[in-house]
Image 1 (cartoon, rainbow, N blue to C red):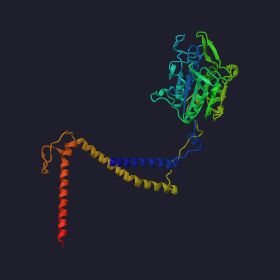
Image 2 (cartoon, rainbow, N blue to C red; image 1 turned 180 degrees about the horizontal axis):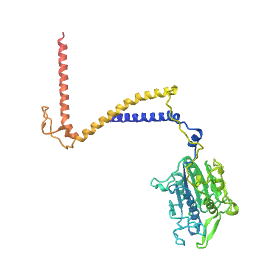
Image 3 (cartoon, one colour; image 1 turned 90 degrees about the vertical axis):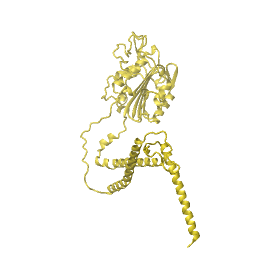
Image 4 (cartoon, rainbow, N blue to C red; image 1 turned 90 degrees about the horizontal axis):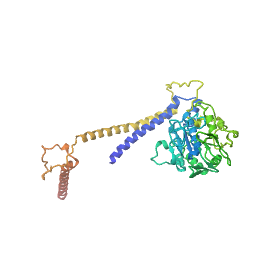
Length: 443
């Protein structure tokens, strides 16, 4: 077994040395062969986000809260239209208004009385529905502390390069938001969950939006970096509904989300609208409440952040004024200290690699012989007594000893081995006797 470990260790060192050589050559030579200009290098090494994710949550149920389902589906429709795929959207809806018996429009949810936009559509993927929408599940989704059996579609698989949009709607109060009229999440819970996300490198920047009464109280305790928070109402204010659909008999959308959707309907994946403009979508004369926001934790100026950095999924592309021309690899035979260092390193590495390569070839050859012998051995369960008392082997013409099992080999060779040891011992005794007699006789 120790021999096998030494062989594996040799192979490991062989491949490890090749990996080190590759890394060394990459670092030493590639930047010298293809130098980049400053603009291209700045673009390639920028710290912008690499993916967009959205967590959209309706926390209330029952028919008279129809508008909250319409709220969250309106945002869902917008982010999908702007490029975020369902695989990167976590949609949590506490009640199924589309299939409610009171709904006069089965399998449809509208956010205006004119029924211009069916926000339910035909391709809605709800990840958490009904009683799955709980405070515990919401926090587990944010922090990634989900059971191992949780499907991939229910996980927020973000990383340090992900921009995350969190949208919450429902009934709230000063410092809390109700879930299903049975439990609450507090502003402290939200702040701690977001801090866990930051410590676990689960987001790059975050846009937190909440449409509920006294919404601004929910982000008062935030202390994590790179978070821009928006609330539909300040502390002490109610967030009001927009209008009623007589055919349904209930309010069908809240004011803040209605005007936010109106703004987003004019946004395309290539638009230049900014978050600064989005902060002004619902002035008080329209919302009848004061929209609040908190930007002290956010590192960038909202007026310079595209709305699609959170509501869309667009890759950052810049058109260069001039084509980027890569120079031809240098063929000059110039030498300097760095070159000499590289040559010495390569020579030393070659002397280390060659023996390892030879050892690896020997190991492969031995493995090949072993495989050949194993294929020739046939299973024989028993073997007769091959060794006679005088040391001769019987049945020599009747058996092919290459076709024995390990037990058969043992029965054949162990007696021979014992007989050989006995003969050697007798030989040693004879030699000692002769030596003793020679010493006794003397010269």
